Length: 380
Image 1 (tube, one colour):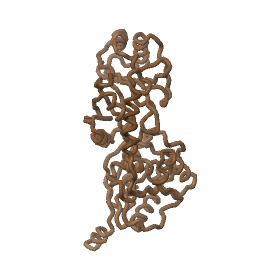
Image 2 (cartoon, one colour; image 1 turned 90 degrees about the vertical axis):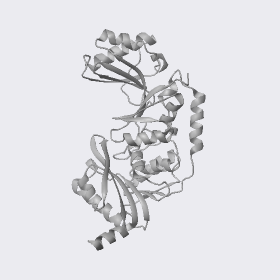
Image 3 (tube, rainbow, N blue to C red; image 1 turned 90 degrees about the horizontal axis):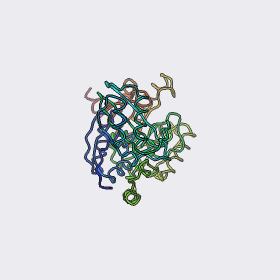
Image 4 (tube, rainbow, N blue to C red; image 1 turned 60 degrees about the horizontal axis):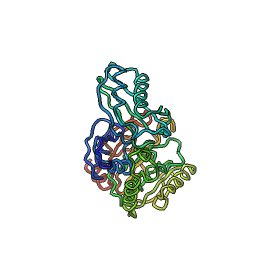
């Protein structure tokens, strides 16, 4: 049963699909990038490894059913043909999400009711429903032009919930977004790494996990552990292999923030995943240190945390600090506004964009080199 080949899908925030596709290839899996994620195939071990290692996806879905239905009675008949007893248990609450587009069956609540009816006829019990994202397993139903695709989530809670972030900051950045920033930056895992707006430490912690090759899923559990086809022996083998890959990092990681309470939170979060010795957190606002060369990866505050004038000032100060404290710096940051980025007076270009908590944001990247700046100023 463990060698059954599944059709799998790594759901990814739109705009980050290319990062996830590269991640998947780096763990030896061939994937195909599509809108909203990456499609791939594999056995139970591949499914385990995808959940354990991938940093940017939000969940790994298993495609269970594909069929056409134009009436509710036909829908129930189609649904009950599939082996839902493998994935759904009487004692585990089930969360279901339905979308319908250009189909005769368009009422999502009615579709949900009939699908649960078909599942109940198959498994001989009424599945418990829940709306809690972290409880039970998601059943994702997509209907388009009368074609149904029903997937079972193998992850359980979203993959960005690594398990180490016990204390949240004022405006926490999701772990998968933080990981995407680090991966897009092209950090060599050896040079000094700095987040001058570190908050609860998410970017620094994700950088530490990447530098040590620590699988992000080692600190949590997954929905597939309750499936009938789950192999505890295989799962333990995959986890042991992941633990053996962890290595000592050859880098220095710094996180700065002006508020002591968030630095305290960052330090505690880092300790939960064993990264506290690798990261130096400090209560400071643009400290006067001669770093010379570094990778700067950060999420400057915006939105409700700062007024427009305060946000503008933060970007200006960040730009001045970089030009004053570094001879060379690779810069990657998350921002909702290109105008704010331009206030830094540095050559940063937008790499991609996505939605963060309903706000459209871009990832900007560039390099500052004091010698190149001086040469260009002389030429000018």
